[in-house]
Length: 169
Image 1 (cartoon, rainbow, N blue to C red):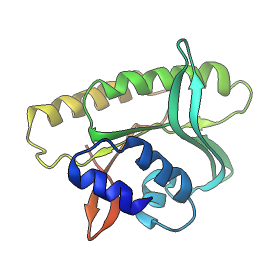
Image 2 (cartoon, rainbow, N blue to C red; image 1 turned 120 degrees about the horizontal axis):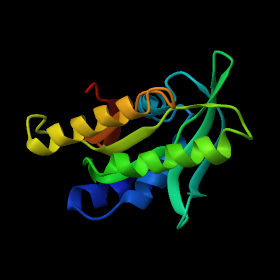
Image 3 (cartoon, helix red, strand yellow; image 1 turned 60 degrees about the horizontal axis):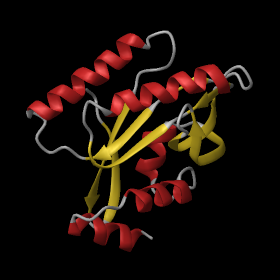
């Protein structure tokens, strides 16, 4: 799986399904420690789902683990992008938070930790990156009482391995 994902990444081909399979297969298993730290942040995974159907039109949350940390249950909707993130991604994540709050939380009390995982943006001074950061900050401001701050994680290739890194924005 990883060699195929890397080959597609390097060739500039679509590989989001491979990225999803890689994360689903390895999350919480200690295979990729920076993946575990970036998404789980020391929490213990209870269960993991992918392609979770939600909302009108049945949009799908790419990956959604339920975790426990310090006695608190946390549901983690993860939106994956095999390309660089942009400001439109927060609209999608907002729909996930709305759905989770309305349909999931009443049945399974949990905090919500939304995560956006996308290809590393090298030029952090670009207008695209500034617009992304503005949208992440707006999302956080609009959801201050609904969920924790949106975690933005970038991935890159590092010596033939996928590296995941939380970005402070």
